[in-house]
Length: 415
Image 1 (spheres, rainbow, N blue to C red):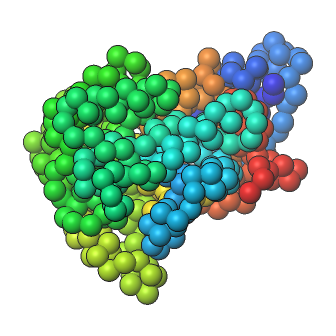
Image 2: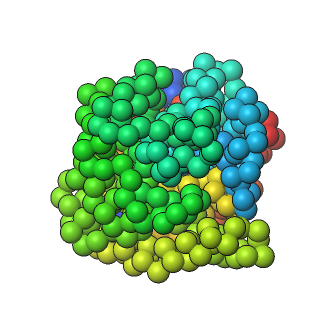
C-alpha cells in the first residue's frame, strides 16, 4: 500500500507520458494512475507517499518467450542433455530471478526440460520463492524427429518437447499439458536453428495444430508456435495459434491473415546475438549459418508485419546462445533499431500488447483496477531505450503491489 508521486509516468497504453505523474496502490491493485491529484492523497491518508524526484514509473515488462532450462551458453544443447531436471529447477529459479531484477515482472516459458517451469511457477505462486509471474508451458509438442526431438531413441525423452504424430496424438499431448495446468501450449510448426536439418521445413501440420488450439481455447489456455519456414508459418496462423514465435519467413498473405485475425507476433530479435559473436564465440557452425540466413528475411518481414498492422509483442527466446537471462531488455532496443518502433511503441509492445497476447488482461498497464506490476526507473527510457538494460537504473520492481527488488535498500531476490 503506497503512493508514488513526482514521476514521469508511462502507463503502457498512452502515446505520451505524464510528466507530473502519480500512482496509488492498495492491496496489490492500482487505485489511481495519472497526473498528480492532491485529492487522492487526502482520500488515502494511510498510504505512505514517496517523492520520486522525477524518476520514471512504468508497467513491469513482459517477456513472452523464455527458456528457464537453458542458460545462454554458446552450445547449450550439451548442458540440456547432461543436466537433470532436478538441477534445472535450481538453475531455473535463479534465471527467473535475474529476469525479475531486470524489470520483467512476467515471463512466459516456451518449452522446458522436465517441465521444470511448472514447478517453479507453483513455488512462486505459493510464496515459497521470490520471482516473476511465470506462465508455464511444460514441454512443447513436436513430431518424431522434429524441432526439440534431437536425442537418440524413439522419443524426446526428458528434453523440452513431447513427440506426437497425427491429430489424435497431438490432441492427447495437448490434454496432458492441460492436465498439468499449463498457461501456454507450445507447438513446433517448423524446424529450428538448434536442431539438425533444415529449419524451414514444415513439421506439425495445420490439422494437428488446430486440434491443440481447440483443446487450449476451450480451457482458456494460450497457444504459441515456433515458426521459421513459410509453409509452417502459414499452417500455424490458419490453425488459429494465438502467438507466432520468430515468424522468419512470413509471406505477405500470412501477414495479412495475421492482421485480420489479430494473431500476435513475437519476433525474438534478441536471439540473433549468435551472429554478433560468430564462430569465435563457440556457436556450432551449422547453427550460426542458419541464423545468418534467417536474418536476411527476418528483419524485412518484421517491418512488413508492423506496417500491415500485425500486433507485435516482446519475446526474447532467452536462454538461447548468448541470450542471457537478465538481458531481456535488449529486445526493446532491437524493436527500435530493427523494427523501426519508437521507444514508447517498444515499451507498449513489451507491456500492454504482450499482456493481451498471453491472455493476461489484468497486467501490462498502469490503470485503476489493474494489478500493480510496476518499475521505478532512474533515467529516461523514452530518450534512450537502452536505459532499461542498465540494471542499476531499475531501482525498484513491484509485482502484485509487493516490492520485490529495491536497489536503494539492497533488497534483491537471491541469485
